[in-house]
Image 1 (spheres, rainbow, N blue to C red):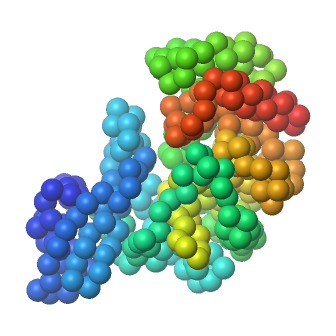
Image 2: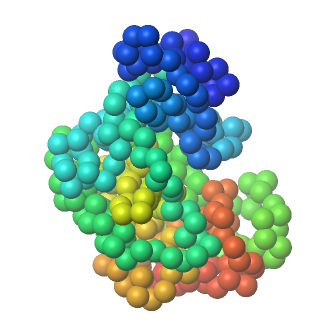
Length: 322
């Protein structure tokens, strides 16, 4: 039976770290607390006399939405990602170090980047530092250009996580029978969503993009490249949470990144830094905008229905332009 992390039980965490030889004999866990909200996983900051560690556990559900099952094998794929890129400084240099992991318990032990914080505040401010965006774009380019060995394809098929993501990106937001009341999120959103539900050309193109997402890939992609997976300090930016990684099309990562610049209403000068280089990347961006507005994976967006209607129209234009 796997060990389940519990921030209220530091002695159990201490014993587990000792069993994994990740805590020197005689040392204690001083405290354990959640490190951010976390969507997919339970993530704890564990403080020891030598500093702090991040313990990240994949449990058989989505941490933020426990009613949604999720494959706990994602921890194994994520550990493999860290091990694969460890020898590539242009990729590993912008990620925390993997210090250890337990396949049995689905726990990763990672370097703590504190005082770094995630970048979700940009939805309120639109303030993307150009140097950070250039660093993130360069990181993507390095990932997509250096991790192309066909032997990696089978290791990073990640079929269960890809199926979960496919459902929540390409299918469920365009269904009427999900049980979500969109007007609870934003009054008028259900009517705006119905405009897309009734657009057969749009729905058909989103379905086609879903097939591309599930299809044959050419390189390793991050799979969830948005501000919640970016950490920043005063002088740098980092990438975390590659549990959605898979062998796919690089345009998917680029499209997701650009979509979140649009969702944060970034200025044109910022958008120009990450402008999609292909119609496919632009179309993926349009789908990401749609699913973040009318799907279950909601964002802390500080605006109302008028702006959401405008963004849904941008989504429609980007998807249909493919």
